[in-house]
Length: 399
Image (cartoon, rainbow, N blue to C red; front, side):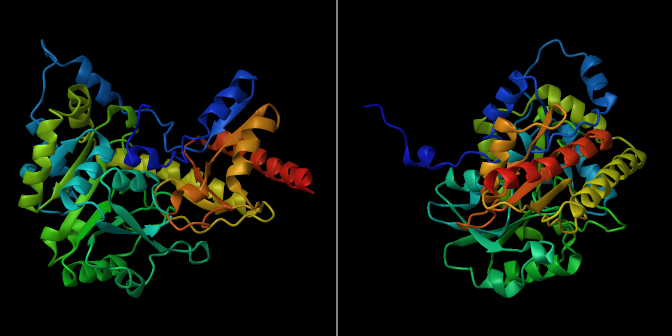
């Protein structure tokens, strides 16, 4: 009998994509599906991205430097300098998306059985990245009742063992939309320094901060410069998910040498994606301001709509473009699948990501879903109306 590794067989299916076959079947039946399951923005990618590729004078589509095209790394460093952080191009390594960036970092830090502490709910692929290295995600649970605020430092310290290698946060948060204040980051910095841990920050949603809230990067924390690793990407801020361009940013030279060896093993990041990325990193502040204003409007519409649906709990959302929402159902995966298989309202249905897949603690998130408000306000309003009627029909079905 042909055999597969325990590691591969143990990887969980993505809660974001596992219901795709049911969505495809719904479309085949003629049902319109509002995709709120995945963080794929519908805002157009800046034309400068495509223009840079079209106007390139390349005669051969060659490998780039394994760390990324030098001029792109310079543009990324300049971007961080505009944010007030002293970063140079040697402290930037370009990756094939933020996913590869985090995979490289986990490989550099984790031996089999080593642990990374993560507040849950968390981006589901963190679990797969860790399991792929025979590592362990150790969750610290946050609650919807407290708007998924960062748990107290004592909860993190209680989880630290001899196998703990890092604390990982996503700020602003996917899937919660929480934006951590500077005071919370400083407390994590104290723990990282005290216990000689790395502090990994997934900051791909950095610009998505609402209601005059300010994003504070871990790069701005003092006294733990060598402990901080930032994961970043062009996917969200430039609506360029398919480019697959991310990066690792760190002042830790030894770590950078280690991940460079991994980058050399995979040869180079995508050349066309790097050309486009270099162009969009030069966009003015007005681009970011317009994007954030649009998403703030979507957030407001989503929150107002959900607050009007009986039994639904939507926490305050002040960053990213997700909301982790409690529904009046016992099993959100069953409900999400039912919405795609059996329900439509005015010819449409809604696809969401079941909440349990964003938790490592068994039993958590069974009545929650992640909603990505990546659709324009008109479609988002229709999707919320569809969800409202779906919940009513599902309750009547269960009665």
